[in-house]
Image (tube, rainbow, N blue to C red; front, side, top):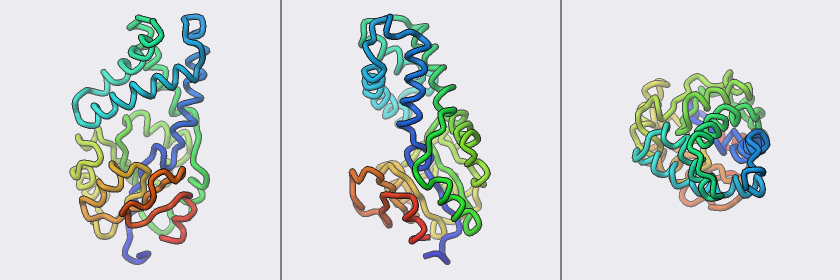
Length: 232
């Protein structure tokens, strides 16, 4: 295995970058800055919980190409405000812009993210494949100091398609000068990362830190990033 693999493709959010922790911190700042308590939103937790429901639905539409990212960014917050009886399109857009600006600056990584990159970096060519917004993902990599480990960062915006579409993986192979048989995908989303990689005959490491899913047919299954050392 170690001899065959030359290229490692990582997902970013919820694989290396602790998306939930960073989002919580951004929401706390937004809640205070825009005085949302005074506007009728009882707590940052309720605001975040309602947002998550709308965001998940809209992201699913975005992933399917049904809405543009410009619509997604503001609409998810406008709908959340509406839940609390606040009809303010301008405020929704402002909060949307604030969130995209703030969240990549709140650096929270999963345990051993840097350590595993340090371990892999001398041995393999490392890359990112992400469905996240390009400007946000590049900022996350830079602010966290992880940018120096990756040769190529492949975003869905650049590829024109999103994971699990096979075309983004083929695009990534071409950009990285890699072959599927000498590559492995590491990600947390079974449908998007694992099945997507499997569909192009690429090995996968399924990262499931909360032990929610189980191996489920993935090539390898881990709960901690440090376990990658025993595989690669």
